[in-house]
Image (tube, rainbow, N blue to C red):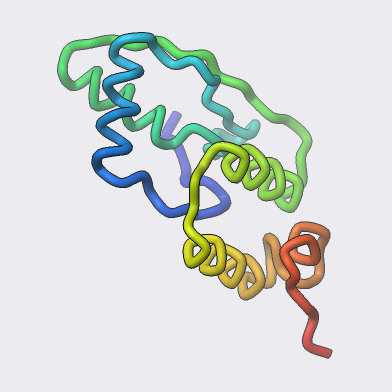
Length: 126
């Protein structure tokens, strides 16, 4: 099944950060499951998945656990992915600002008309 992009677009890891993650996965495997929704949309673990694919291309098969999240609305998926990533990622103030602006402007997920958007300080323009 082809993997679709995550609902939110966080800044990618830097190349040194990604190389470090990949080497850790090479040595210890994937420790945190990769999460998808019931339609195969990636919710969490894009960098882990990429590292596994690159290692497979090098002839190193890495198995990993998957979690399938069922029955969540798009807003719930966005909020879930944000909570998981923001708890782990070390984003700069500017990266956080860009993420918040993107969510507020989306009008769909994380926009001013839903819970995720209001939590990020999005305001409806009425």
